[in-house]
Length: 335
Image (tube, rainbow, N blue to C red; front, top):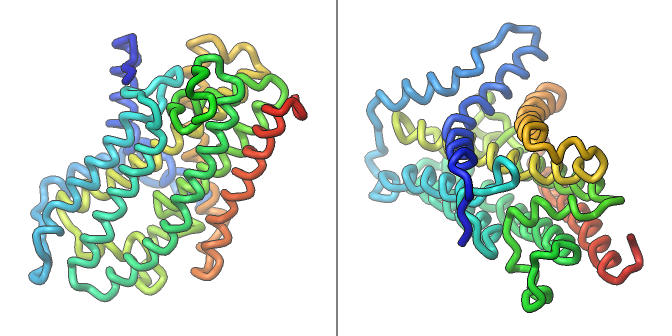
């Protein structure tokens, strides 16, 4: 297990993952308001909403059990655990160990499971319907994520010198930090691979955050909801923790995608190797991801339920391209 070797990096990463979710969600809302021709709420409005909800009382359904009481703290804890292994500034995570990209998938799945359990525990038919949809699409999403990460692992294992010879045939022992840096070691095509990986993570971000075109957080029609319908009966601190957890998951994927994209840019623009330039580029990558989410929500409408599997499965061909290129590069066919 590896920890950051500089206290400044640790404090910066903690501030990013603690305060960043509010700003990330605020940027999305502000972007949508600009496209609608409105002034829009403040970027810190999600923080005000969080504070307001934490002061309220939690109301639980009369038919709910202990699951509804413990689910939302577990959801928040799982998202925070995922943030610990996510590469932040300079591609370093708060905690790094072999196979931590599998740990990231597991803790995100744990939080999603508790959200499904809480929705079904409420006894509401609408929330049960939303839980069924969430489980169906998550079943497609999670293997796609593993496929993308495995492709990036193979790409990194063929070029990162730090991978020991004993582990060269076992790429699953790579870390998220090494995965995020793998395009940097490919001088000619690293930027292409990083763009493909960022696109796949952006699709996953819209699914994890329940954003358009997967879901519409602003809709009032229960029959068309996925994530929002599962928290219809959630209120007070429970709703605050769930909303914060959703925003944190989006920030985690945005940070991972920004690091991968930055490593690809370093292959072309040597100026990004400067620590100050790298920090600015990393933060700009997260900001541009938030602006991209807001732009997509303003330009597109929510997809039909029958078309969502095709949208999510678009991650598969991206992973196939990266994996095939990694195999060709290991064989010396592609340089």
